[in-house]
Amino acid sequence: MAGAISIATKRPVAVINRRREERFSAAGNATLSWSGYTGEYCATRGQITNASTRGLAVEMHEPVAVGQMVGVELAGAAFRARIRTCRSYRAGIRAGLEIVSDDLLKQWEAWYRRSRYA
Image 1 (cartoon, rainbow, N blue to C red):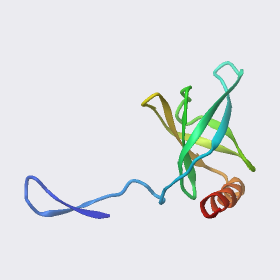
Image 2 (image 1 turned 90 degrees about the vertical axis):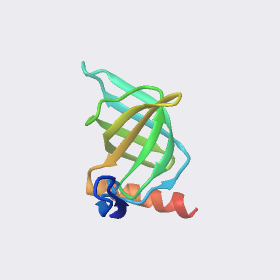
Image 3 (image 1 turned 180 degrees about the vertical axis):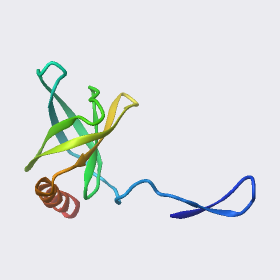
Image 4 (image 1 turned 45 degrees about the vertical axis):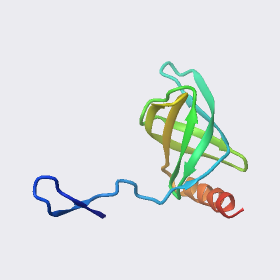
């Protein structure tokens, strides 16, 4: 938590940092795939913009429903993630993905370490 000053009381107040994990800039291509509303196969490519130990942010051209489980393919890793946020951003859509399975999280952490320290 960080400090801030209340406008009304002029006293310090606590401000909660809603991000649970530290992020770092990342670059790379990702392919996201999911089942559409009628069961059809959907896929889109995107550009990774940042990453943390539990997820990543991807800029893409198609929106995906919040809560949707997606398959994510990166260079050297493939796993499943849940869409936590999906918003219009500049020339496309920015989605925040969260890794939900411990086994998949291990794959992601291995990719994360290789990418961050390569």
